[in-house]
Image (cartoon, rainbow, N blue to C red; front, side):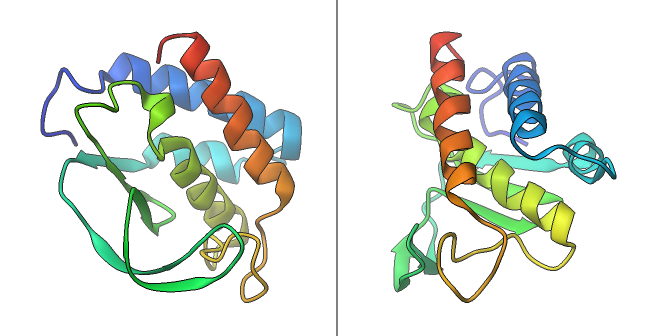
Length: 143
């Protein structure tokens, strides 16, 4: 779902998801096909809407009324902030939200919203490295 069909073309999103999944496989595997099955039915909403709410930073510190650049609403629905300056997918929170959705697909309970915090489990430094690696590849591809 997009406000502007020219902003994030479905072909580029598909390539980004394939790069993500291939990298995920190299890092974590997917023995029960939960991640690929989830990616195949994932609803992605891109919008320029400003959203705020409570959330956690990458270290597990909770913030109130934080500005969101993306949200994983369930394992099957993500929202990504689209901005004019963020023409490339690699410059958005897209891959970050794919990690949350994939962790949720594996755990079946949550996507580890506190990242490296201690309240939820699942997120590791490897997930952060995966995001950096995938985004680097996407930027190199011009996506």
